Length: 119
Image 1 (tube, one colour):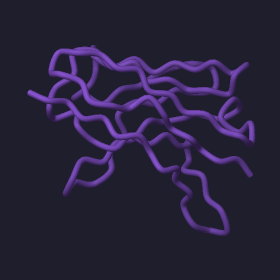
Image 2 (cartoon, one colour):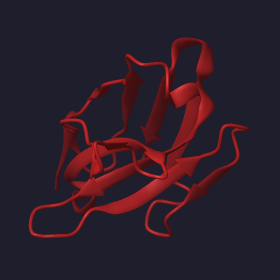
Image 3 (spheres, helix red, strand yellow):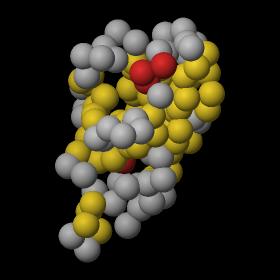
């Protein structure tokens, strides 16, 4: 089974841009739909963008027009390009397959990558 690894997070000023990446050592992402989720402090995890194996995309209303999800199947990598970032985008960002990857009946999540947007 693969291991999900998110990277690319950091501190950015409001209005700035950032691209985060997700890779999988088990070559699972390339053949599945994938979603980026985020969890802000004190809030539930939410889906912000998804992409099918055929590259059809969908976005949460809060990020539509500002975020772009894409995939490079040859590199088993999914990206989230974020533009015009706002302080409310501050969260830990996670990627996962759709449906959520499970191991021994439990949901599996990577460590995520922290995005902090300063005002």
